[in-house]
Image (cartoon, rainbow, N blue to C red; front, side, top):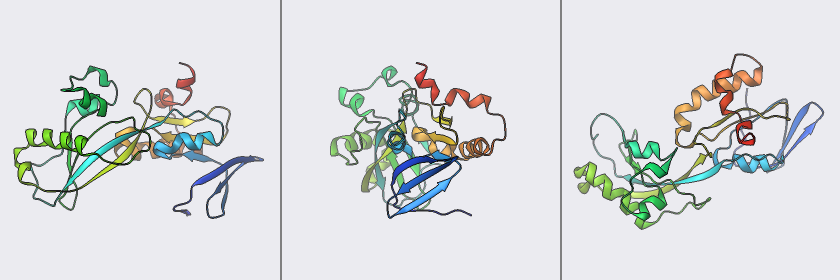
Length: 227
């Protein structure tokens, strides 16, 4: 089985013999053989508790959400620029310096309830979760350019979230040198949901000491210490 502790921030991690001990808020204490750091954009803060440099930073993304409407086409939509900006934004022909500053891209996906989620930006803004009118306006301007029918659709709210970004745009997966029983699975940026099944399978095998994982060695945390 599994115990789930909601709203319980990790406050201390220590080694107790051959076990790990994790202290959290609300007087939660857990002892275990293995730990997987999978805290998304906050994984670097978990690493700090152990003196480990995990180079993951929050990449802010602003999104506009529409009212519920009938489907527009049969699929979701992303521009190549939105995908390329994750790895090398310098190659993109932004229309303005502001677009470059906010890392403007385009994503258009429909939720099961019928709302469309329209984005997005890629901003190095720390953990600032506010949205701003100018950035949302640019997102909607290009939306109307691609889908003129959106001129007739109402926006009901805006939100911002954080992607866990790494220096090279690839996730960090694997064990952590010098810390037996400590693993990491984070830094997937905007691909976390899509890659979570295979990531979970790989990391579970690593924790259990099964399977061959040579193909994911290049994703190990040590790649940053070798640079």
